[in-house]
Image 1 (cartoon, one colour):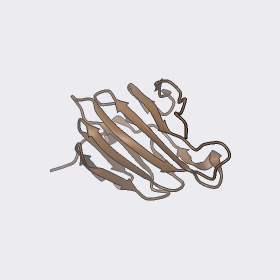
Image 2: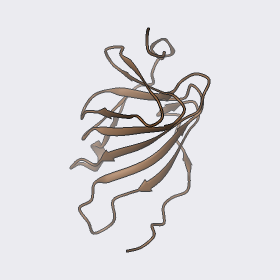
Image 3: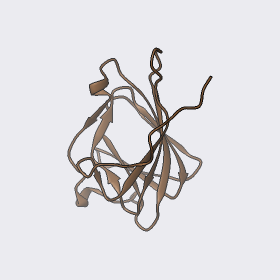
Image 4: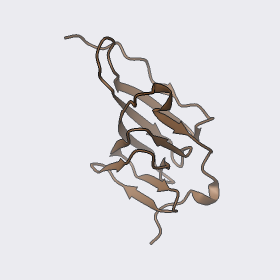
Length: 136
């Protein structure tokens, strides 16, 4: 048993995110094990968002603060509030974001695939015209 020496808070790269987004890794697979889970606390500035992407084994996102928007290719945008968890199945292209006007924080849990290079497939940025909250 030991306390992990995890990396410091990092700002996510503009190639993959629009706006300011920071990540803190809370748990990562340990050397010499067959562990696959990574857990991160991710904080988005108001209106910040990921690029389109998908996960080889899906992803769980638990919102802890603010209002989150999650969008899929069919134009669906789901609003998720603190205490709620969203599941995105493997291979589903999506984005996550802070709603306009508020910061948002979520805990992300994903499991690595057999090919670490294919854990996340990053795609193009979300166009401003496609970024909007849930439709009434």
